[in-house]
Length: 301
Image (cartoon, rainbow, N blue to C red; front, side):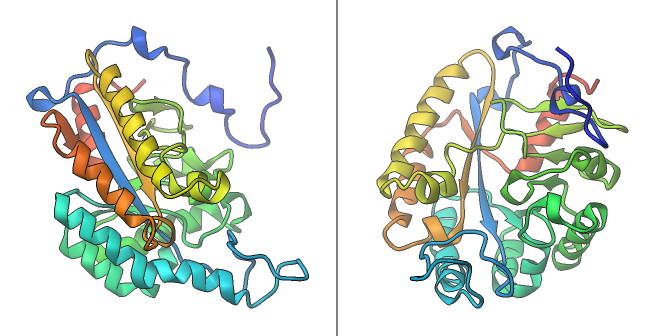
């Protein structure tokens, strides 16, 4: 079948070849481990002069009011209060943190950045502002500036990228590779890392999640809080079973204003209370996953 070519860049199926996971050479983790879990915390700043990215309340007469006080505050609660509840869970179970953060949020929430730097969390680029990457005026400048502010605040350039809402343009993987990023996590299509073609050097895609993700589960599907725990454990048990002969990667994605809410955080905690007992499960950051795959996985095409 012939697909129309995009104005610039490659079609998604031009970037990676189809590969059935059951037909690949087995992937092995160190010390006989079976699978990897990485947990990503998304910290964003919502611009009060713009339409809110998401809403918990709609105004009585409809529309998109500005300022949108209830929805801006709903999100801001996560950065002031909710994040610190999640941090207690990470500390208690010694989970290596991954901070997926907007460039503007680095300056907006210095206490969060300081706490993560002290704990040696990994920082990912997440757009300079929280908006669709297709609406960013200059994508390369946005990607570059995101890396620069993270490097200034943490002393280290981000190696990974996860776009706002997983949005990309036709060129995003090309620009990321050219700007020195080692991996991206926007392409949620596998339980193992995969190489993606760009117009230059290949870039690695690391498994992320749309299922074990509090935005999808709580805000779009409107499940009760306990669903997050139940689905995470169900997903973990199946991936653990799948990993009997070849390693797998499972992601858990949270936002402080969602899973950091008082009625939800206990279910987040219960996930690690259960799966942390597994001796053959590794808890890694994205760059640890990337380094392992670069060393033991198939070479880039």
